[in-house]
Length: 356
Ligand code: IPM
Ligand code: MG
Image 1 (cartoon, rainbow, N blue to C red):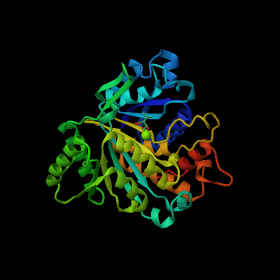
Image 2 (tube, rainbow, N blue to C red; image 1 turned 120 degrees about the horizontal axis):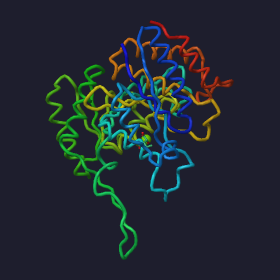
Image 3 (spheres, rainbow, N blue to C red; image 1 turned 30 degrees about the horizontal axis):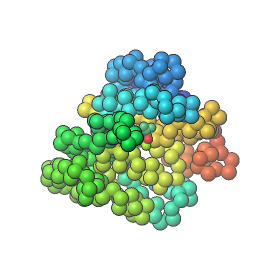
Image 4 (tube, rainbow, N blue to C red; image 1 turned 120 degrees about the vertical axis):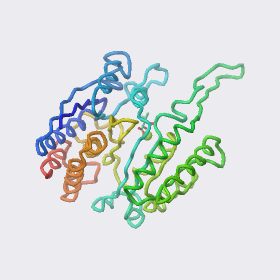
């Protein structure tokens, strides 16, 4: 197949890890007889430096005209001034919203060879294999009103947690659909004992649940779910939750596996177009050193093949190559190796193991 892929390397280690993922995509294209055409665009801090905007119009237009978008990371100390009117993270939020990507998929699967990296006891990590579906274009991140005003008593700030029935319905339905291809169990996480938006969320989740009698639905409050993610993580299959809860819980979940550097994500909307990015950030402390782990981005490329291009065998080929590289002891510094390999060596180790 022919596919147009937009690369948004972004800031920090973004360019280094995206480069490795692109080389893996090239290797897949050659192996399976596809043609991938890439264009590279600005997003985040680098876009602010070049254009004054964290998401230039040209970037959004290019993404809209593509089949899929592969993103590295945005942000860094250079743009961290809280007084600054433009911030790299705005670029990320704007592109998610601009492309209508309301569903963020973050799979978390324990890798037996890396069990020692987890801060948890091995028996708590064994068998962990779940998928978090985080709502991505609603809730506190985008709700209005939002902002700061001066009052006689001092400053006042407001963020609004708002969800419509339509927004809840589409994300919860996706959770049930994806659960059908897994262990058929959806956990909806909310704060229905306090929040009105959560009570609506729970009601809609129950309604959708009736359409999927073959899938088991349970509800958990976000505080106890945060605890169960540590104490009973293997019990989860598909988790669905609102934007901010999902943001927090997925960083927590990443710890189970041992390194943030391993985890991919996909952001999807109504059509096939999707945005794929590792869940780690721009890691300014190691940027430019060539030691970042490209695995999360390479696994994001696998998700790109699966969800946007419908290339399941190709996606599995990448995932198998990653597993075999890790099993063979090919470990970057974040994986606790005594003599770690670097970013390009990790990429090469994965490419060498790609098989049809
Ligand atoms: C994430 C990140 C972003 C978010 C930030 C960088 C805006 O934490 O993708 O989880 O909060 O969504
Ligand atoms: Mg986050």
